[in-house]
Amino acid sequence: MSHLWHKLTSLNFLRGEQMGMGNGHRNSSGEPPILEEEALAWLEALTGRPCRRVTLYRTALTHRSVLHDHPPDTEQPESNQRLEFLGDAVLDLLISEHLFKMFPSSDEGHLSNNRSKIVNRKSLAAFALRLGLGEHLFIGDSADRQRIRTSESALADAFEAMVGAIYLDQGISGAEQFIMTHVIATLDLPRIVEEEHNHKSRLIEYAQSNHLPAPLYCIVGEEGAEHEKTFVIEVSCQGVVLGRGRAPRKKDAEQIAAREAITMLETSNPFEASREP
Image 1 (cartoon, one colour):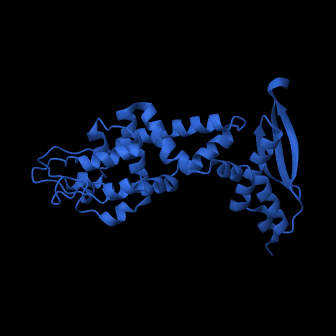
Image 2 (cartoon, rainbow, N blue to C red; image 1 turned 120 degrees about the horizontal axis):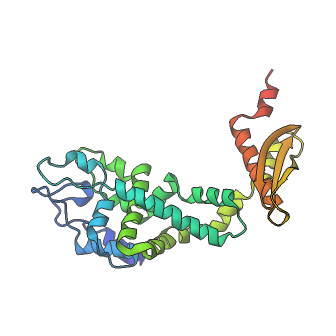
Image 3 (tube, rainbow, N blue to C red; image 1 turned 90 degrees about the vertical axis):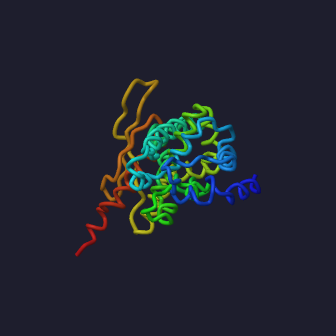
């Protein structure tokens, strides 16, 4: 597979060197370039399935700068912004479903935070870079092509647009296969979750390094019926309430409270204010 990847990405993405697909050029008629067999092979190597609606993938790789340079008397191309919108929703759905099934004891807060570590600009740009999407973007002549090809925003947008194109072409199963192969399989999810659930340890480390007493966790409320009770827990240090957590399990509520405490310490630390002369 690695050999095939290097072979495919070394080939011209568009028909004819003069068309310069990767550089955003078009032919003299103003018509959008046509994907060659090599490009289709590259796309199908990524998706693992035949690409039937080829124009969707061309649109997914069309940066908005192309619209600014398009001849006014020819048909206006479509940028990848609409597909980006769709792909973002598909990504959220499939990543959420995977986390929901993989971590049945996690509450909404933990699931949401773990998802945000996967579906964000930085991580999506890294996925796009790994796939080489930046090398194959349609970019307008007047734009800074090199900057756009390595732009975190442009790469993340292209990745989401590609997911949207796959969803429209291959359905939810095709999009899921792509995400499982190029997102989930590349992540160390247990490590990500461990980091998410390690807020109490981080809070203890902060207290020790700043010569503060150990944080105290206290149940301040219980909500709901006995069989579906929710615990409300506050964490404090030196009598200062730093955070509050609410969850069906006490240990999860403590982690949420600790996470909130860390956020407070990073933004408006009450202990640093008390030390000022």
